Amino acid sequence: MGTVLKDVQPIGGDAPVEIRFEGARFTAISGEGISPHPGDDLIDGGGKLVAPGFINAHTHLAMVLFRGLADDVPLRVWLEEHVWPIEAKLRPEDVYWCTLLALAEGIRGGTIGFADMYFHTDEVGRAVEESGARGLLSYGIIAPEMDEKGRSEIEAASRSIGRWSGVADGRIRAAISPHTIYTCGEDVWRAAIETAEELGVPIHTHVAETRHEVVEWLEKTGEGTVPYLERIGALSVPMLAAHCVHVDGTDIGILANHGVTVAHCPKSNAKLGSGIAPVNAMRDAGIPVAIGTDGAASNNRLDMVEEMRTAWMVQRALYEEPMKPSAADAFDMAARAARPIFGLEPEGLVEGGSADLILIDREPLHVSPRHDPLATLAFASDALDVTDVLVDGRWLMRSGELRTIDAERVRFEVEGLRRRYNN
Ligand SMILES: [Zn+2]
Image 1 (cartoon, rainbow, N blue to C red):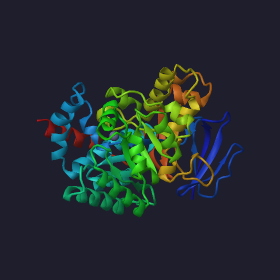
Image 2: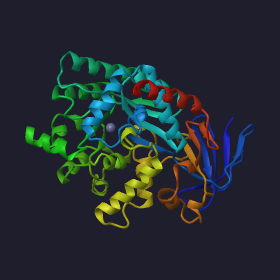
Image 3: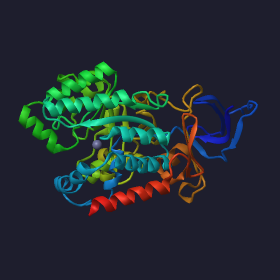
Image 4: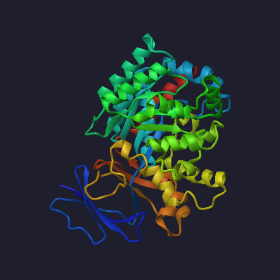
């Protein structure tokens, strides 16, 4: 038994289509109408927009706990006096509840997949599995040397990969995450690269986020950040590189040559005063640039529509360029560029492809009148205009109601954690 979704408007077209899915796959997508099979559910899409869902290509989901906590202090003070003391005390189940809150917020706004990096990854995995969303999970390795601590960090990462890689019919994937080049020593990086090769997983890391880190690394070692990553072999395995704010032409050439996927986090980079990544130049060089929110502590939302809007706005401002990125470029970054790293077909919404989609309301005043659907979505829509989210043939949200996460319970639990840790 399948489902036929009638009267939905694809963002790239000008006529409504019908979509049939059965199990986890789309079996038909047609503008000519689809004959339902006996027993199929029929759903009237009411002329809503239909699109592949967004993929949040870099985040630390459980950090929603720190949303709005000491937003206007220097980074070092914020970490040392506010975040690290709480993180040191977090219990595994705290990470579970915070991750669920973040997933609920993301799914509510049309995000179907999340590339997460944190600790207590079994709890992150449990939350992602229950939510029905897609996840690329990793344990954030921090170790200056390959001593006892270094070995136990690599072991924790390997264990997490073994536990979560391919779980939930492949909805959940795993990566290995040496945190940065300056928080993990070269031996630790080499061990992580070896593990990535052995276990067949990508590396998900932070690259060239701040000018300070890039300049300091160059002064200390005489080598650029990206050339260093290339020399130690980190780019010889598939890589998802968050930020890439301070990369020059040489770096961009190297990243392009190695097929690195960049996770651009414009709001986090702006909030933390890190700068603006040269996304247009990276895209011109052929680098797939995806979009991520980073953790809620540095955003403070997990809203991919707002993130997509910020991405095209700041690129146009940075390059004084009124046409690039286009609406199509912005949507590709937010919804398509990270799909291959999640094991999904690049386009989304194709016959035989995985049954993932979102429906978006076209009635609100801020999206009227109905000109180009793609431009409306990229430039004017709000995340709360998303009404329905389907992942792997399962509805995670219908008519604005979350189906897999008890939002009230989650809010209650996380509010309890705020009181517990803020005293
Ligand atoms: Zn990050």
